Image (cartoon, rainbow, N blue to C red; front, side, top):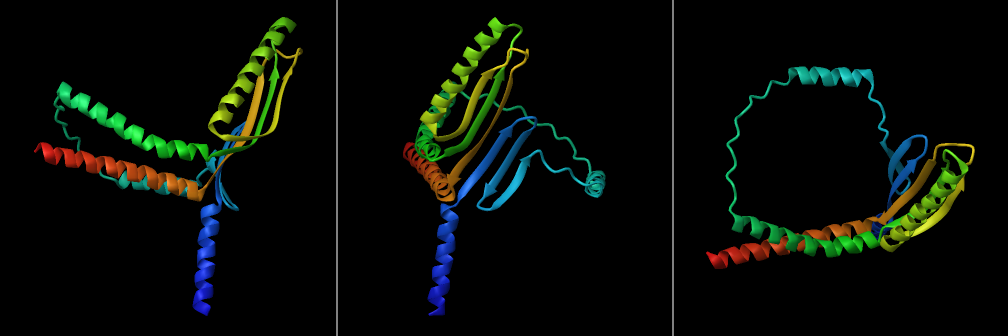
Length: 210
């Protein structure tokens, strides 16, 4: 009985892990921030935390201890024939088409949430400010329409306002990219399967020619 309970708890943990979201936080304001997270865990990707002086000293010592690598003269690569080049290009296109399908399905599962865009438009005079204001509206809302065709987007705030007292334009934005662990693993296995099928077919074709 206890074994079944432990097995059920283990399967429940796996299900929770697969359904949890991988999150990428992007914020561009006075400073650019990039963070990643899984469930309740968060860690900063940029800016990175500064290393302590002790760690830096140890790294310098390790660099000094490393022997210098002897430079070896590389042999000039032989030029590939045109037929081999055409074959490799066609193989690359074929492989790209096979992998594109699972990657495309994965991209459609990515969600953009908490999208916030704040833009204050300025110019040298009132006429230029008005022109720049119209352009920025077109850029921002046109980009939003394009983004909505690729991903599922949840907008938190979009504000575009003219500032006739300033000569500069300020733009800040932030958003979150979310995708479930299950979707990521499914896309990875599908792409790997497409690659191995492609490699197997090419190997089979070479054996027939031989």
